[in-house]
Length: 180
Image 1 (tube, rainbow, N blue to C red):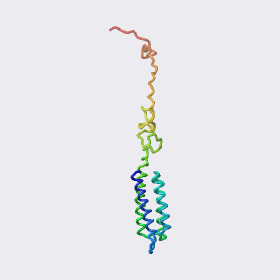
Image 2 (image 1 turned 180 degrees about the vertical axis):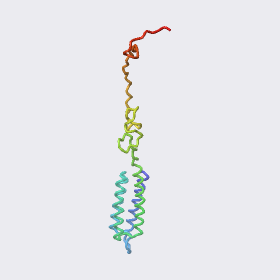
Image 3 (image 1 turned 135 degrees about the horizontal axis):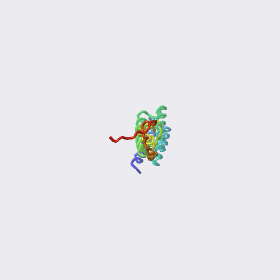
């Protein structure tokens, strides 16, 4: 049995012993009436059973019922304020142990994923309006896939220059070249 389960069982047994000892036959009214003691005893048994089975959330719920029963008994004057304070201290101790046990077995929350396409994205992209990266923006627009390679340049058709005209004035007759 783990230390935690042992501690819960020991505290539960302590509450039961306190409740049982207070319901004895004494000329003065007991610090805890028999009916309230039985109700608390049943609640403590539910807490210890759930905790021993590893159902810490169930044990915490059952402990909440014990708390409510104690408050009801105090309001009905079925328990003295001193005895109520002792039982409440035990409930607080068990509650803290249960909260620690639940925290120990609860996995931490997963970090947010990067492939979320929500509008809250604060990426460095330019909404796909950039050049040189196929319009994916600087931040890749939240796209986690590999961007497509840039298109290969196409060869533009080139035209061979045609023979220059014989003269710059198309209507003029060619002049003979002189040899000076």
